[in-house]
Length: 172
Image (cartoon, rainbow, N blue to C red; front, side, top):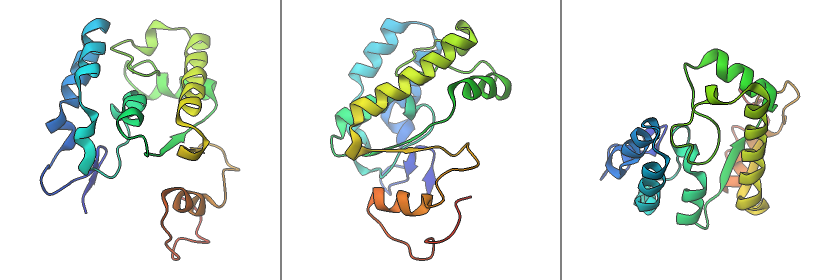
């Protein structure tokens, strides 16, 4: 199996993000035309990912709600962290990153001050937690030294698999 940030490659589709038009959607984000971006997202049939086991990272996370609507039985693993730390590291480590909310449509983090950016991060995380429901959501904080020592077990239980080799191992 070959995995990319867009999920496992299926034999019939080498790059799911490319073949579904998600890159085109991402390009619309950069144009700063929210109406065009929203229409492009509304018109995209996210069910084209039927043959993919998992999607993650940008731009997929920006469309989490669209994926949940297209796949009502799907589950979401949401990494969380302190909003203020997220803003600080995002500004420091990324060149002109997008704002953090669903379908940001080209709005950049630089368009918001630190307080507003942290509040937007918190609100988006709360929104995703609310719309996904407890049975479909696993919150994971990888950024704290006291993080869940049983993270492998939590992940395996959440996705419905068991790998005895990983039980008792610390998460990287």
